Length: 380
Ligand code: S5P
Image 1 (tube, rainbow, N blue to C red):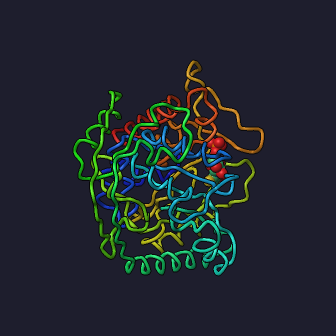
Image 2 (cartoon, rainbow, N blue to C red):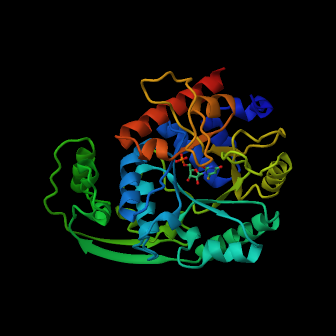
Image 3 (cartoon, rainbow, N blue to C red):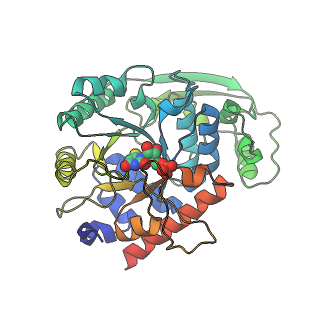
């Protein structure tokens, strides 16, 4: 067991950590975790935008973070307001999760700034969180932080006014990909103020028959400067938010790649310590780490750890049965070990869920296991 699991943060509840968090996105994420009873991140490593959006929609209810590798998607649509990032953002708001582009930046400061904010993908626009490999040195974190601050400042002055006229359509978000799953094809009302359409949607979500006849409304929405949601450039007022929580704050967050799950990796203890030092220097931007354990050691540390290399043995096997790697260097541990013993906060699971016969049910099995490990940890 890691000595860092003795740190007081490890036995604090996620809601207490939300109250104490200094980073707005960490505060938001801890609140989401408490509301959804989930400390699960899905690593959506698939190859088409359709598969990605379908996964986000079907697994969304079980997760608090959806991790992407946008460069694995062979038909990623780069359009700023109707493209894949924008569609993901709508699903994130509907199901209540944050988007984490696992970009692992690793170049000189000037280049990573451009990769983050410019180019085809414009990662900063749609991804709440990204991460960095700190091998180039601490300047890479300074540079990403600077870019995020400038981007945030620029957003303050963007005011959006929009007028829409129409009747509810069954498509909305769902028209944007071909779901094989009937439940994902529920109608979404277009107008925020329409009780009947909203009710029909809620009924549809409950699995009951929905009927939207015709609601024609004129809506005008005005996004005040500095609105926490204006970045999404969507039909914000038309979207149903996850109940009990507002849309995510506009601030962006960074995770430092402090430790890796792969066998024989070259991340030494000195490198990991340098990551922790850098995180302490950038508390308003760095949320925490990609690591195999909690890295909080000083009394005032309140960083979050998200941990990949996580799988459960098959349901019929003993929960303590050893889990084999993937034959390509990846090593796996169970949620019970990573959350319960190593003090991690969020487990990141890819193939364990997406290759399962029933990914939705499997995601729930992981969510339950990781949540039980957390509950056991805080009551120990
Ligand atoms: O150390 C790491 C860091 C990361 S971000 N080990 C990892 O496996 N990852 C990522 O987590 C990896 O790029 C992949 O997207 C995911 C693990 O996927 P899985 O299918 O092995 O669960």
